[in-house]
Each structure stands twice: as C-alpha cells, then as structure tokens.
Length: 335
Image 1 (tube, rainbow, N blue to C red):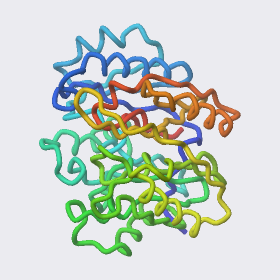
Image 2 (image 1 turned 180 degrees about the vertical axis):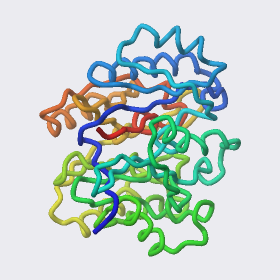
Image 3 (image 1 turned 180 degrees about the horizontal axis):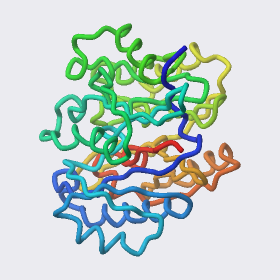
C-alpha cells in the first residue's frame, strides 16, 4: 500500500497559498497592474476560505495596504524570488495511516535554470512546512507542482518534456521518475503526455517545457478538459498528439476541449494563454480571462462541468505577462 496520497484539487481545502508579486523582471512594464489583478484573486478566494500570502519583508507595507482590508487573509513574512507558488511551495500529501498532512519538497531550479536567482524560492517548501509544523520530505526530483495533475483515484498526468528535461532530471529514466512519483504522491497510474514535441511547443510563449496545468486538467474522476485549437493553427499538431495519448491511455474518460485564444502579444511578450490554468477552491472555480473574444466560451464550458461550484471569471491579462495565471500562482493546502 502507498504510504502517501495526494488529494485531488477539488477535495476539501484548509487554505490557498499565494506569493506577493514583486519581481520587476517578471512584469517589467506592468507590475502595478499585475498586482491589482493579484489582489482581485485574493479577494475572490477569500470569499469562501483562508488565503495565506507570502510577502517579503521589504514589501510588507505595500502588501499590507492592499490586502489589509480583505477578510480571511493571513500575511506570512517569507522572502521569495518570484510569485509562482504552484511550482516551489510544497506539494501537500496525506499520510494514509494517520491522515497527517505532509510536505513534499521538490528541488526547484526555475524551470531548468531559466531564471536565476531562485535560491529563496527553493527554500520555500521547507519554510512553509516549518510554519505549519509539518514533516517535510525531499521529493527526490527536480520538479514543479504545475507539472502534476491528479484525480481522487490516483491517476496522475504529467509531461515528458518537463519531467524528463535534461536541465532537470538528466540522470533519471522515465521509469525512475515514475517510481518516485508513485512513492511520494501515492498515484496508481502515471499517464505520460509528450508535452512539447521537440522544438514544437504546445503553447507559444510557454517557458515551463509544457506544464500539465496549461494543457490538461481533471475536473472530476471521469472528465478531463484540455487545451485545443483549430486545425489551421500551428499549435494544433502538438495538441492533437497530446490528446491522442489521453484517449489511448484513459479510454473511459470524457474529454472536453477548452479552445485556446488566438496567439497574442501583450507588453511585448508572447502570452501562453490557456483556460486550463483555472484554480479550484472549496466553493468556486476561478477562470483566467485575457480580454479576448474566446473568454466567454471557456467560462460557459467550465460552468457546464462544475455544477456545484461557482465559476468566477477574473481578469488575468496583466498577470499573464509573467507567463502564467491563477493555477501557477497558487497552491492548495488540503484540509
């Protein structure tokens, strides 16, 4: 029997962890506007549950002035390099015997060493575990939380282009990586999607080597939504190859397409906009909106799938200049 089990995102949560945006290299033209969208995200989550926001000491006064009037928010003093909590905060699991919450601490190197320095973010998982009084267990991989998608039955999806990236885990085979994921997260089946196909990216502008949370997400044990586009789009072939793997390996699962926006630039950057980057909280599903015509259709698809949660469309165009959205910016702490 597996020692640990990673709860699905829709299982009861004690809190959502976020990190205050402050890196001017991530948002060189629009940090203030990105912060405004971040504060709106905090407010949306806090309507139904606790939000813990990590804030560097030098940013405490500014963050306090913008977050201080929002209820259900706890500010935690922690120095960070950047705001992408999904990838460097703990991946929380439960001990199957004691039901104890445990922190899995992956080695984090900013997506294959792309954005140094990352030393402060690499230490966050152990600091969060200490803050909560949890056991902190080394993950055994260079990995990120955005590379993991799991349901209640222990079916886990990830991508080869990320998990087997030579700048992350060059010395490990796919079988070795899979064994570690099974041991640390308690999954019973690992579905390996190719992710990026050589130089052909599934999402133009993506810098994660194709995190699963931009590509395909469980909405329940039987249903997966996936990024999709028209056959005339240059992204179609890579997306089709990934979806074909899901069809073969999980033939009983219902697949629902979430159409990608047409490729666009904002603040001089190619934005890897995907509606798969939604966040599930206890009572809501918070869906990124990029200020494009495809926004409404994505909201309608997710409303049809989450009948017991309120689907909340929220502006993310400025935050997405950092090349991620709400799921990338958050990490759920199971109840």
